[in-house]
Length: 173
Ligand SMILES: CC(C)(COP(=O)(O)OP(=O)(O)OC[C@H]1O[C@@H](n2cnc3c(N)ncnc32)[C@H](O)[C@@H]1OP(=O)(O)O)[C@@H](O)C(=O)NCCC(=O)NCCS
Image (tube, rainbow, N blue to C red; front, side, top):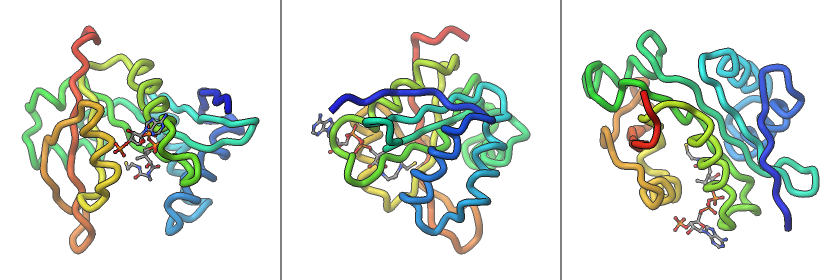
């Protein structure tokens, strides 16, 4: 089967298609608030988002933005590792990456990840994933991500997330 990577933006119908993948994969996420979440990210600096399509159907998606002081996620990570940590300088965060279950294990997650990392301009890429998400952790470990923090809860009583980092030396600051 042929797959096409297509960028999406704030006001693109593909943003809605990306949200549908997201709410399918994370069933506890509500559609309306997820649209707001995607749109608020799409307005941030250095937003890049891609969907991956098969025969016109959107089967996966990913997006991220610049990661900088003042952003909630960035500040939480900075509290744990120090705001001057080299990994947090000139950094971009891969906010979401998801492939529909029946399309996994055929290299699509890697294609979306690579397209996003190629498009964004920064030498440090960051992400968080639940510490018990072993499949995602293995995927990222295989593709050169290392642990910046082994895991903490962003909210009291919520699950722990590990923070991962990938250095991209080919990106000039
Ligand atoms: C994590 C996730 C995005 C990976 O997507 P994917 O499309 O399955 O990723 P890939 O196919 O590129 O790689 C997955 C596995 O398939 C294997 N693979 C890659 N290309 C392949 C191919 N052409 N044929 C068969 N297997 C292949 C890889 O070796 C990899 O193995 P691993 O799991 O042991 O590392 C996907 O599992 C997902 O959406 N999970 C739920 C959401 C999530 O957890 N997101 C990340 C949290 S932030």
